[in-house]
Length: 245
Image 1 (tube, rainbow, N blue to C red):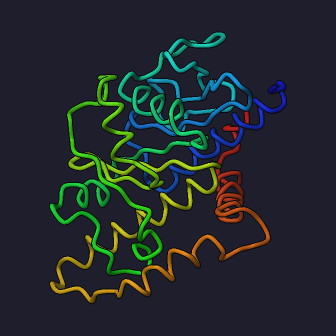
Image 2: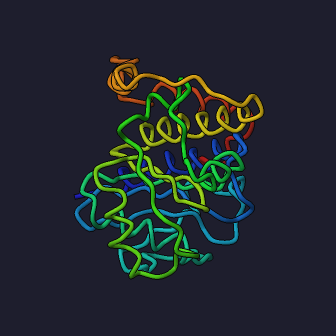
Image 3: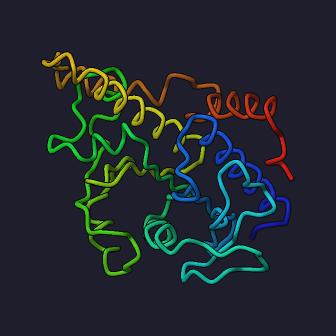
């Protein structure tokens, strides 16, 4: 059973994520989404208000919805159906998907449009080896019947390249999702930047497996991504802490 404090903590964490995305240049006008489950049995989750830029998102103006897209409580803002549909599908059917992140970054979309997808030939890509899936483009994600196909594409992977579209990750915690997306984004950036050089140096399957195993254990003091996320919260707090409102 969730308490008002549990929900407020989730709102603060998600609002911080939106401001961090904006700081990193991962926002897309008023589009794209990060969603986070509200603690509790109902599987309600929080989304950004449709119409606000990421720099305008605060803990209090995040919109709480149920799995059918009904707004819980009051909101001055609607939600974007194209964002709600895939996020609701993942939150509803993947037990541990507490956070879902989706971006349309230039590097991410460039790799999503490449027939080969992500080339496992750099440090960050190697960390994702064995944890990356692909889903074919079906148009704007507003149709619920795409849900089963999306879930089938995801399988047990936490990082997904939406072909011709962008990047998506899900995870048990928001910080872990953030680190996974950051690694995927960096891998795409390196691949795009290196394309001008031609041939890439392959990484052996053995080393790929080793990187994928070692990456989650880089900091055993806290959960995966938490130290990175906390550092970025401090960065945005120094710039503008209005996200806490």
